Length: 93
Image 1: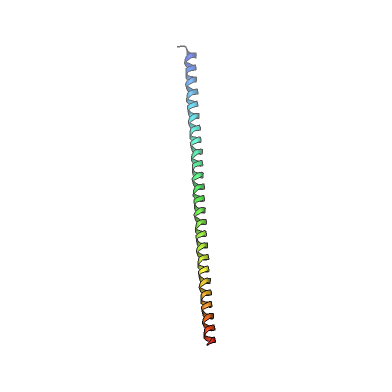
Image 2: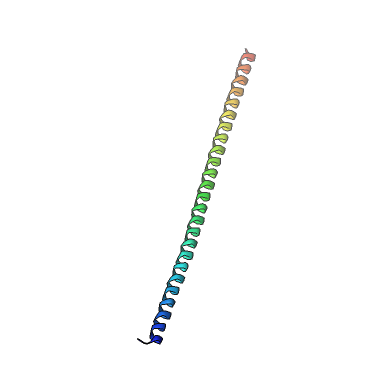
């Protein structure tokens, strides 16, 4: 083989090694970007789940408070009506 053939083979090998290294760097960058995207998606999903749970807990608490208030009001009204009826019946005798 002539020296020019050898040097062109060496140049081709250097170019192939450089291309492989560049492809490896590109793959590493793509993998890092995909990892960042996955982490962002997981964080967003976790935040959405936490917000939904908090909203559901608030709704349940509000419903329980409303039910308790309604029951208390009904009990108070019934007691007042019974007292008024008893007073009227006792005063009419």
